[in-house]
Length: 347
Length: 292
Image (cartoon, rainbow over all chains, first blue to last red; front, top):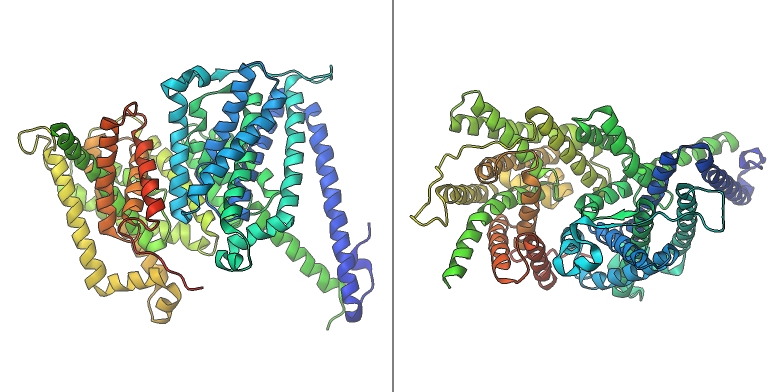
């Protein structure tokens, strides 16, 4: 690997060296990605099944947080209602599996159902901003568990008891148990969804979404259809969260209304902020936080679990006010400055 | 018609609770420009302090005044200790810290005073107000306390120098700082006042819903809803909004078939959202016009 700092430079060729520095960063990033993927593939073979299951759940939460991030981080719309889309995805999967449809088909179905419902909810939400949008989405989060318990839907949703499912086994006679298989399935879906998200944000559409976040008036003056993009990203965001919900239902093999309350929406939101608003890799950190930190807090003190959780949260915000992604950005920035200083002759 | 009137009166009685909470919500919103998710838990904690003082033998009004004073100091302390160091952090990080505070206060109260429900005395008595059992003496007392606080706040913000300074600090921090106002302390003062108003609200609400660590979670949501409905920039609107939420909730439970107790919050929220779609700044709020 070629280090930018190794190349002798002076001010005249600084443009060239900057380009080589950029390629060296790209190589670094690719290297890190490959190592992470290799670790992720190796992981289920060295660990207990329960831990594999937990990591699966963390990745699922990360996908849901990614959905929220596309809405909040990229487009600047605030939502406390994503537990609703998670629930819609989960119930879509559960109801289909109950009707003897293969679990593989439930994922795209959950995605489509959530895309449509997110888009439809995004339309009236266009009129609302900030705190008011938060209240409207909160209404959605609050309504969901109640609606799932309602009598006339009970034939499908199973009412308060929910629906029990059967964990799928690995297909094609693969030598994996069901926890390991679900881990790989989740990983593959996550990889696909992350790839799509990265490309979406980099594309023309992504730039339009960011422009709307940063300055809606200027964006519409540039000819961006603000209403269309805003409700569309609401749908896409719901799609991500819904697919996560479907995966969650398959992995846990159980759905019930009380798993999808407002506290799930809050957990997703906390994961978003802790990972870093607007950062796509940060959502992985957020997913891990949502799953593991409450358990850690409980192991520190049963009676004061909530307080320990709160302290950890405050401590994290103190250490990294812009989330994990913000911290990494800061460190990389420092590193670059140090290297530039040592590599360049004094001007 | 009789049923309708009864439900409206019952709605006003529960609405008093929400109005009380809504006032505290607007107070903090005026000072720091966010909705404080920990507001309800702060009020709950203050109420537990009052309960403890009464248990130790303090007369009600002594405990009341002491609790308000302690809450005021605690509110200022929370701002100085928790929020001062991160005042440059993004808005969403602040909201996460609110959630963290909520978790800490809730679990702390449960740890110190356990989760058993406790009765809290009312200074106004519990009998009915006018013979019929529609509005109790306590409900009436609670509503008058709320209205009294509203009037006091109005005079504080309109007719005192420090009230003017607080409004200036909230509306335009940079200009206020140039005019010699200590913006940081104005925010701290806002926290203190919000905590004190929350304490009063908690002590008024506790005789109705009983005292336990989770008592405030749903009430805070109604308080938010009321405040948003009335307009977050107007304390009077928030109080009126609180009453309206109470009335809407009761009427929805009575007249919408299949609604029942479970769905009444949901229906109330959707009505509020519908109102907001028509009038995005709340019913009595100023429309915020920003310069491009």
